Length: 71
Image (cartoon, rainbow, N blue to C red; front, side, top):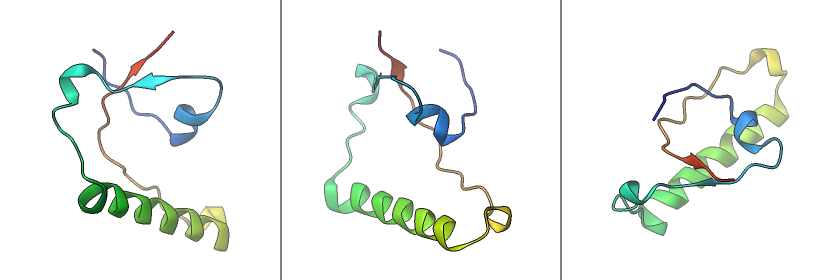
């Protein structure tokens, strides 16, 4: 496993497929406790970026994510 810092565009650009490794799946999230809060954070950040000059927007640290790129 290697650790890298990626811009979110790196994850979503191109035709890549990522999977959460089996050893990470025990850390399950519930829809109401984690996923909805994460989605609200993503929406708020996107709305901020659309409303402001990109030069005024500070980077946002999402946190560590463990994924494996699939063939």
